[in-house]
Amino acid sequence: PVAPGVTGARFTAVLPAGAVAAVPPDAAKRLVAEADRLMAGRAEFFGVLRDDLADPDWWHDPKTGRRAPEGYAFDVPYRDEDVTGDIKQIWEPSRHQYLTVLAAAYAVTGDERYAERVAGHLRSWWASNPPLRGVHWVSGIELGIRLLSWVWVRRLLDGWPGAAALFEDNPVALKQIWHHQRWLAAFPSRGSSANNHVVAETAGQFAAACAFGWFPSSARWRDDALRSLERQLRANTFLSGLNRELATEYHGLVLELGLAAVAEADAAGVAVPPTVRLVLLRMTDALAAVVDDRLRPPRQGDADDGHGLVVDGAGTDRWASLLATGDAVFGSLPWWPAVTGTDVRTPLLAALIRPYAKECAGQAVSRPASRPAHFSDAGLTVLRGPAGIWCRCDGGPHGFLSIAAHAHADALSVEVRHDGVDVLADPGTFCYHGQPAWRRYFRSTLGHNTLELDGADQSVSGGPFLWTRHARSRVLSVDVSDEGVSRWCAEHDGYGPSVHRRRVELTAASREVRVVDEVRGPRRAVRLSYHLGPAVAADLVDDRAVLTWTRDGEERSAVLDLPGELSWRAHRGETNPPLGWYSPGFGRKEPATTLVGTGFTDGAREFTTVLGFRGR
Image (cartoon, rainbow, N blue to C red):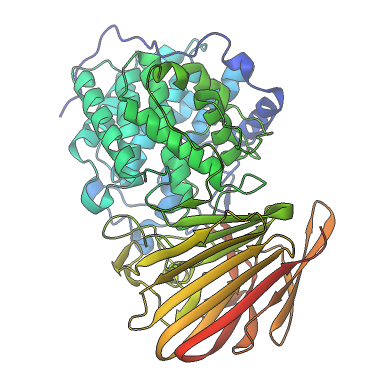
């Protein structure tokens, strides 16, 4: 199909006067430093350093050296790394979020070099990627996020004399924008794929239909996308506000996308159903509730470093930024943690989004009076102790929808931090495609702080994004009413006929976390794993490990007394098979110590672990 001709198009979804001036100087400084690195052609995507971004090959994967095949989009085997390369490395630059950074640098500085580089790269991308040709037309989430980036590029370049010639007066740009929206209208994610992907698709479609409403179909696309966005935000979010995928980074992605969509609605004067803002409010309160003292949320489930809208430089705290935006839009509550960092995105979004109080005038909106510790629908509990002791306990559903695509086999796992440092760590994700042994490890039961029986995962995997049988967990009790001792107990049925039950107690006075694992059922081989954070060193003697690390120049320590019924070994950086690794971000991994206890159980047997913190 041929894109309809457009005449007289104008871009009106501009930033209000004073929005750019409200960007804090230190955030602007980080932004410009990042933009200058990009101007020099340097960037990092998923642990791979690139120096070719001055004139990128949009189909090249620098990690494998391969170039994706050309041809009809849906004929490209994009999941086959031997043919296409690492698809995440190819897709990520084409989300054009580095171009929103360059455009933001132009908005802050007025330096036209940034605008000209953005224009050159957009024209290059449009010429290299005609509609339905190649890997960039395969996945709806990529098209949706790219549209959102283009909206913000146009907005941030509004003061540049060439902005209109690049977008609304450019037939090539108009054709690309039209075909992106038509693609999203024709091929929405459905069924078991209706997770964060469909939120990104509808948010990008809605944003473009609002800001680039120049086509005969724009009103229909906008209305259909808004209906879908409202439905999918509700479907993807527990009533408590936590994301149903139970993968924390996707909570952040969906929240960013939702806030960006509301910003476009308000900029265009489009009425948004109250449920959209209510879901985003609940998501923001939930995020404020689960972060630790350094504003780090749980490391739960898959994480691929995906962002909805990027206009900040390196070193900007993603979670602090979201909470700052939440404060500006919804207002913080007395129990919220203090946010001290600054960012570029918050003042820009806040300039577009109408304050929530005005939107809910006359409506009763209930928000938590105190900081929630237990989210019953998500099965997530956070126990807190003195000196920044933070303990996440997992007793929730295995994942979202039938395939639970982004779940890990981590039922009853715990994650313990001290003043923001991972002590008992969730190792993370590392990869999706191309390295199946590593994908299996980082999703496995052995790869989490929980108990494994007979060398098998609690849930059964059918592929890198598929679980064919889900362990069912249930929280039996939570008691955080006693300021001296917090308690949690849950069990799961993933090892039927055996049952694994775990009790966790956090005692404030002794600064101890006690974990008691009970296994009821026939004789089984046991492996109990504790993964230490990369900053933590361990001296293991028999069943006691002395843990040491440094925080803000101070030496910290703890003692981990392990169950004596098991035989304990320390593993670090092993590859055959993988064991003893921590992934700080997608595509990156580093050695870390994992303590594994092996033995047997029969009948009903308990294994007790005590983590005691010393000093401060």
